[in-house]
Structures are given as structure tokens and as C-alpha cells.
Image (cartoon, rainbow, N blue to C red):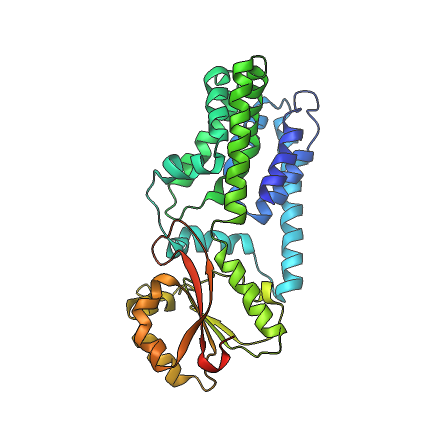
Length: 349
């Protein structure tokens, strides 16, 4: 959503020189920041540049910028009051959680150079060739936009927790460089061949990542949904890194499911989440869990890497493999090549 709003805002921002009194982009930017405050990283330099070139600076601040920011913030407060039932400033909570408490690092930390070596190149994919060409031939002409890209990557690099999606707001700006590169390349046959190769590569990568890579966590939910639809009453436990599957948002059926939790604790600095405790000694954790549960679990869902670690447990509780789906050609850490489902012997289909 923030990427879409950034694209819309940039459309109006790019014509400021013809429509200096148009503040539409500020409203769109405000909405984007309300939804995700970190979008401000992209827009702070751009709004500041607008301020510098604005002839009537006080008018810009007190007639447009301040009223728009205050109005959108009040709108956010009222909507959150309706849904939460109390007054709450979610943007402040967002900053507290991610910056002041640094709890985002609870979900993984990458080195400072990750966006440079992996995040940005992977986000662009084959288009990085066009981007490099655009920067090489038009970097000076588009230095303002190149600065925004570098600025955003540098600021995000200071944060320990990094994700590809954090840079998606830059894609509309990257498209500008790609566009001028394609405009120049389309004039020669040799360049057309390069563009054709890039298109084919993009289609292949999109098809592989969309239809093949890491598809197991989706397909296993289809299987569980069919089990429930066929009249069964499964009780499912996911022995996987937390939030690996879509969960009830995909099942749309009311039967008990349980996954390893990983919510952070803002008070206990020595807190270890349930998922980490489980992977320290899977068999011991399962032995304790099954002694505490009144209604036994009928289906265990896990990555194939875990099977050998709990083989004795599976045999003792008479679990046998009842479903097996491909997940990834590139297993990593706790994630394996396949997703397997073990059922108690009476439920094997």
C-alpha cells in the first residue's frame, strides 16, 4: 500500500514546478506515513526540497503542511479509537516498538551491508541491469532521485532488522531509471536482444518464485482443509518457525490448530520465545506438551529437517507420515526441502 501511495504522490510531486499550489501529494504522503511511518524516510528530503524552492515558506507550512498533517493524525486517532475502544496513537507505538525498544530485532538481525549486497539487488532482480544503465548514462541528470535511493538505503541500514519489503517504496523511483535506460536501448537491435533476455528472465523468476519456491506451506493448508471438508475433525500442531503458514486465513474452517509462538516480551530482556525453546530440544518439548494436553493432537506439520530429531517421539505416539509436499530447492536453517504431515495411525488416509 505504501508503495502505491508513494507512486501516486510522486506523480503530483513531479509537476510541482507547474502547479506550485498543488498540495495533493502532501495528502497522499500523509496517508502513506499514517499507514507506515517509515515511509517518511523517503519523503523527508523531497518535502524539504519543496520547502526550499517554495517562494511563500510560511504559507507552505501553516496553510498546507501543518493542517494536512494535523488533520490526518486526528483522523487516524478517531479511527483507532473506534476500533480499539480507547485512545491510542499507533504511530507512536510503532516507533517505540521498532526504534526505542528495538524489538524488531527479535525477528532477526542482518549486517549493515545487507541491503547493498542482497536486499536491493534481489528486489530489482533482472531489472538491476536496466537500473545500472540508467544510472551510468543519466545519473547526473537524475541525481536528485539517485540521492533519495542512496539516502533511504543508508538510513534503513542503521536498523538491525531488515526485510526486502522495506525498500519497496523505492521501486517507483527505480522505474524512472529503468525507463530512461529502455528508451535509449530501444534504438538498436543489440539493445533489443538484451531487453528480450531481461523480459524472459523476469518471467522465469516470477513463475519460479510464484509457483514453485516455498509453495509447501500453502499446499499443506490445502490438504488440511480437505481433511476437514471430508468430515474429519483434525487437531493440528505446526512444528515450524512461527507464522510459516497462512493459518486460519486460508483454512476458513473451525478446528483446533496450534503453532510455536514467538511474540516478544517488552519487559523481560532475557526472554526466549517458544519456538527457540522448542528447537533447543524438540523431543523434550513435545513430551511435556503431550502430557499437558487433554485432547491429543491428530496431525503434526513440520519441515523434513525436523523428522530425524523427533523420530522416537513419533514412533511412541504412533504417528505415521500421511502427506508430503515439496517446499523449496534451497533449504535454510530450520526450513527444509519438503513439508511433511504426520497423522496418528487411525487418521492415516
